[in-house]
Image 1: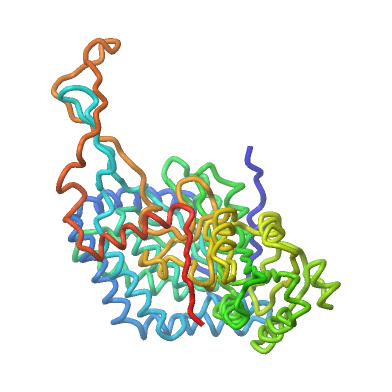
Image 2 (image 1 turned 180 degrees about the vertical axis):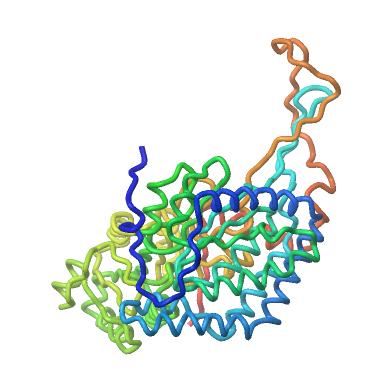
Length: 486
């Protein structure tokens, strides 16, 4: 049985000065959730072309109203900056940096351009003569997204939900209240022209509402928490609703004995400093111990320090590299800090990753193709890279247009989760009066049939086919192998 805990302990309130929104009662929360389901059914009645057009309208609105969005974000940033208890990592996640709104709009357009995801036939079978079954993709229903401090997550998730015909309940952190409210307003203001109720994308207010929402397993079909380890663990332990996500992102980069050190330094630095608070940022650098004698390890550490990264050591790193001890072998810093540990072989590196990693994203840097292939095949993480920054582990960069999050689960979806991760399947059976009669009524043929033509929307062009292929790959173990030139 799931352990119930007090949400006020599990997710301590941030002391950020902010007007208090009116508390939502349990009745209000349930009503909004049911309204989201009803609204999603109206969204599903739109043709593929109309849903794509709605997304393009949302993208245009994001760009057209960027100044409004930025002012709202500035309000959140000012409140957070005035609070000495707010960590730098939260401030980084909270800020909408220059160009971010355009990136969000481009992501919405990319999703609109994808092949129609709903109703796509996956398999067609003749069960018996005149009796056929076709398995097709279908919306999950109602999604609950609980996220902390990341206002950019709202339009990404909303875009994916609109394309897949899902209703959306959003519970953001109060530190991003102004940004979230404005982004939701910009999006739903486009709904009326398409006959879609605004309740299709609902913004939930009040911490007390979370417990009520997590109890609605008869209304909500999937919960996706995006935030701290504490938040994700709380959600996982306090609901019967399926949960998709990851509690932490402890990503490793292993520098092999055959690595190009210039490349290794560049990739380690990018993996750490490009966005230190991201879940795909480097947290532990593993170095083959042969690189100590030739000065390679010192060169890597010097490069990281020159980029402002504070280093801590694992057991061997502390002893042999004279580094201060890391807080833990499995530790997500989320800041310009990382652990460094020495390993004696690739086998040791893999064992270390499996023992102390989170199954998110792990990378090897080596010029030995055989070693790289073995590492990729053996490391059991959602994303495994060769000679590429861990920061590529992202739905937008993978060509998904946007992502609702990154899943380290092995069920339903894994890796960056885009359109495909928000779909389930239905079986459509068409007959001519057949009956079972203890299986005497028909003679089963179970013959595979060609997929129905024209089902699932218009025929995709080459770009859309490629995008769909990438999306499908994102829900398996993704191997991103980008061999970088010197």
